[in-house]
Amino acid sequence: MDEMTYVVSKYVHRDLQPVAEKAGHWLSEFFALKDVKKVVIDIDPDLDCWGECGERDDTEDATYEISVNPKQCLRDFVATIVHEFVHIKQWESGSWDGDGEAEANYLQYSVADRMWKEGVL
Ligand SMILES: [Zn+2]
Image 1 (cartoon, rainbow, N blue to C red):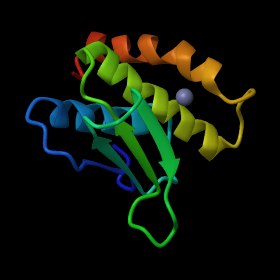
Image 2: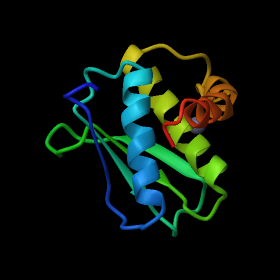
Image 3: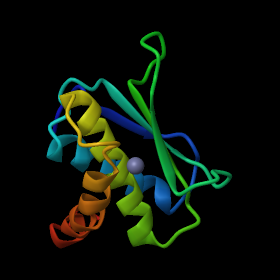
Image 4: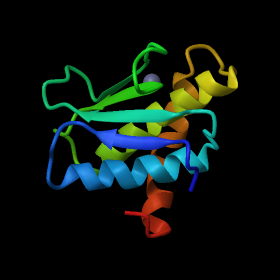
């Protein structure tokens, strides 16, 4: 586990918070995000989409913030977190094709299913 990467979900959701944290820790390692100090996963039922990701200002305490809508099935919820982590990987590596959506959409379910297969979730 990379010591420099922290994952916190702000919205207290009894079932989804531990899922988001486990997925976040595993994905930080899977995508080798060793220069990322912190990723906040905000589980937000008022989000008007399934998920989004933004960079935070250096003065704030997190490098990236992901928002995920909890009103979806568990596999889709985890796939959405994977999707947003692909965008973080793209920003960190400085390489993506077009808007990066094709890679994120391509990876989201295969990587999510791999977490179940490996017993992460
Ligand atoms: Zn996307």
